[in-house]
Image (cartoon, rainbow, N blue to C red; front, side, top):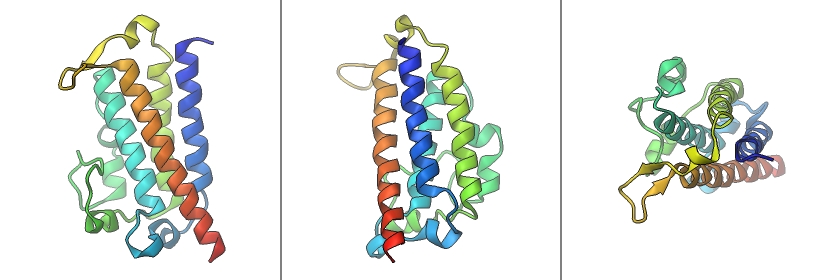
Length: 169
């Protein structure tokens, strides 16, 4: 298996977990916050997808799918289009209201398709490229991609956990 195939598989696992966690839920279920203050499934999936979109676009030198393909307008959130949810307050989490699971998973699918297209073209030499010199040591493309995978899988798992809570009533 090549590095590109390994990355493609990892991002595919995120997609599967997102679909299982959010698929078929109502807007009310997507907005449910366990204990009243936790992150909702809608926010978790939106956030993990926004981070993936942001980081892949930056690495590839392309525009984010969120902006390029009009997803920001379709969601109609009261947030700056560049917002990825990083550092959101409780009120900002609550503001991420999603009209349907199909809208949410549709955006994720679009980002996934762009991600797979990009990572599928990478070579091992590409993965050594430094993408962020603000850190010590500087961050390579490989480290950035693994960071996105790790963060996304954690948030997708959190969304699956909240869905499990919803099933229990």
